[in-house]
Amino acid sequence: MSKANTVVVLDFETTGLSPVNGDRAIEIGAVRIEEGEITGRFQELMNPGFQVSSFIESYTGITNGMLKNARPCEEVMSEFSDFIGSHNLVAHNASFDKRFLDAELNRLPKKYTGEFSCSMLLARRLYKDAANHKLATLVNHAKIPSDGDFHRALYDSEVTAKLWLVMLELINSRYGLSPISFALTQKLTKTPAHNVEKVLNRIMP
DNA sequence: TGCCAGGCCCTCTTTAGGGCCTT
Image 1 (spheres, rainbow, N blue to C red):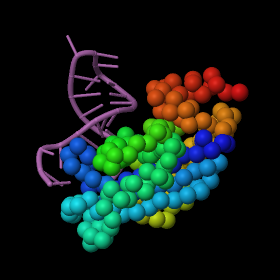
Image 2 (cartoon, rainbow, N blue to C red):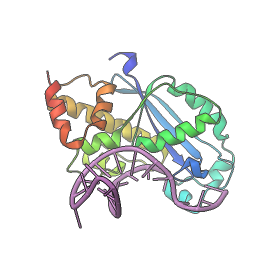
Image 3 (cartoon, helix red, strand yellow):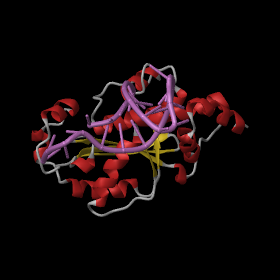
Image 4 (cartoon, chains in turn brown, purple):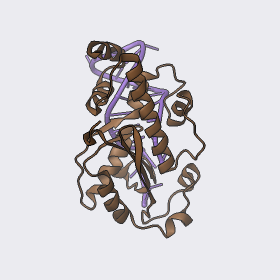
């Protein structure tokens, strides 16, 4: 696998669901995957400039006290921009993390050239029998060891990365395809679920 | 901060509605 196949799996904790409503990132966690191995990690809290709600404190375990001395979003995101470089990106429900990545980098302003693929959309196609497609459920469903705190950015990005690798291996074992290109994962997530089997069978060696 | 989003996906669909997933 060439360096071009390196991906960065990322996860934001935020003050809410929508940057257009004023929500900001409060933690970024990410792992870099090269040749099927985790080769780098990034994790930092960031101060959004206002108090987060008690719901978010409870949901993430990230308190206003913890954010008080954190560096501002702009500083952290500038460093994170260097971490992701031009690599392609993966997240669980990527449309959510993409909105925040775009919003935070637009403030700097910085750009990235990588493209997103989504572990949730891929999981919906590969694990149709899972109870649901929440990250924690899928980690359990795929029998991935987990002993950390879900809803913290680095832990969620780590288990998303492991889930991603397990899903690529599943495609390999079912259809004999290896390595799985990033473009193929994107194609699969845009293929209607009922056609995924057909697409993979068609390109089997 | 304070107006609560938005893209995907199924179905009792396509001139639509509602659940899922992310915080």
